[in-house]
Length: 361
Image (cartoon, rainbow, N blue to C red; front, side):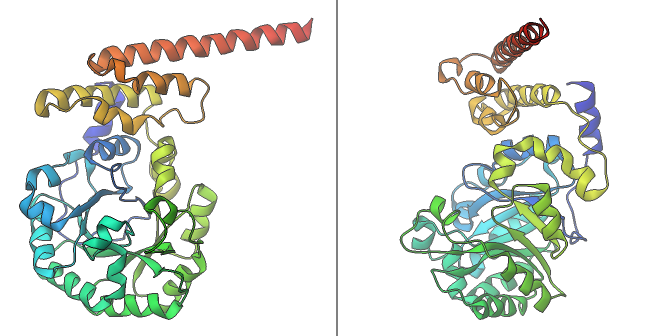
């Protein structure tokens, strides 16, 4: 492994938590279905030591009956990492939460914000906001069996009803079960007529509702999620709230994370270059293939945004996502990607130099 990456991992040798995390992490990467698996989280942890990472939502029943190890295995380097659970049965959620703590997760989070049809058919996710007492019962059942924090992620409302009292009373009821941390997606969840993707864009963002919640519940930790893409917006939200959760922008533009430890935690910035991060990921691909038989494309897909916004990023990305190369070793694909990227960059530099000389003449 490259020297800087080795030092980075030595610094990240964090043991699983046995007590609540205080203070709550100022920044976190949102749980995103099909995206924030353990490979994605390993990649993100190369970029930031302090940011709280979340799993994809995992159905409690899947953990209990569909393969505990498959759902809960993660890399030690990922800490601090939270397990997000989906479900509506207190006893099953409690069993899944207990297993999550035994596996070393630092937080258990209950999803009350996902609007997908599949989740609605299971009567959990955002539809749970219609049953705050049930959510409270689920939270209490989990808190009774774990010592790590139990938190809730939810929307500001459901469907097109923009009633502040709805979300205020939801938090008030759930808090009676002992929950003190709420991550609030600042959009309503429309349970009818919109796809999950449309539910992330069409319902209007109303940050002021989340600010009002914090003003009304100053004793609770309130973090905000939804449409946040720049440091300016993060800093503005931190003036009002305890934390900011970033979703799609963190995934599509991951190099942003490399600044977070310095900007938001007063620590050192990521010491790795993009090239060193890529090499570390290739080494991870090789370990995963040897230990678990994981095909490298399952991992590489998460780092395709590493050169976001740079000249040559598209051609570099095309190499890593070329299905015709999937049977070749990851290290060979890496060499091809870097050679192609370097050739493009050299060509761009030569063109610029030629154009500059022509102007001078």
